[in-house]
Image (cartoon, rainbow over all chains, first blue to last red; front, top):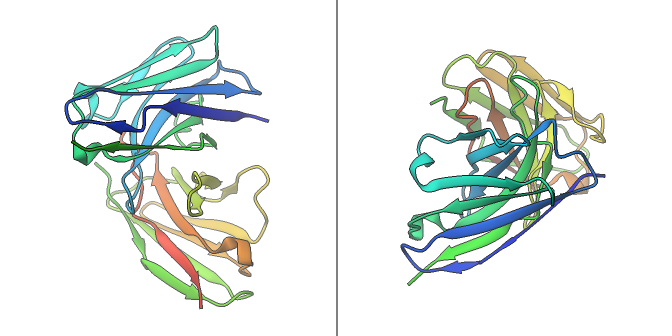
Length: 120
Length: 107
C-alpha cells in the first residue's frame, strides 16, 4: 500500500522560504511523477509542480518563479521550496502521486497535508 | 488556462437518494477529467479518472460520464460516508486545473 508522509514548518513570516518534504513508502519511486498541490483555507485546489525519479520537473507557470522541487532517490523523498512567501500563500500543502504515463495527470495517492500559515 | 466550473455549489440530499453533480470546462478537454472526494481535515481521494473509470476500491454507486466540456458525477444511493466536498480536475493540458467544489450535505 502506497503511503505519502509529509512534514515541514507550519508558521512562516512574510518573505521567508517555505520548505516541505514528502516521503514515499510502500511503492516504487520510479515510473511516477511526484507533485505538490495547495489549498487555501475554504478554497479550491491549485497544482504547484512535479518531479519524476529522473529529476525532470514541471511547474505551474503562475508560480514557477518562486518554486523549486527536488528529490532524494536514496530516501524515496521529494521536497518543495517556495520563496518569498506572503499571506496569500497560506494554505494546506499536499504532496501527491500521479501516474507517469502520457496524459495521466490525475493524482491517485496523497499525503496528509501540512497547514502553512504566513503571518508577521 | 482551462477554467472548471462546478454546480451547484451546495447540494442537499437525503440518505439513499441519488446525487448528480456537474462540472463544465471552458474549452474541450476530451475525457481528461478526474473527480475527487474530500472530507473535512482530510486529503482529497481519487474517485474517477478518464471521466468514467472508477479508481481502485471505489464503490460502484459512484459513476462518471461526459466528454468535451460537460461532465457529471452521479452517486446512485447516498450513504452517510458520502457527505463531503467533490472536486473535478481537468488534465487535458499542463495547467491541470480544479473546479471550486460541490458540497454534498445531508437534507
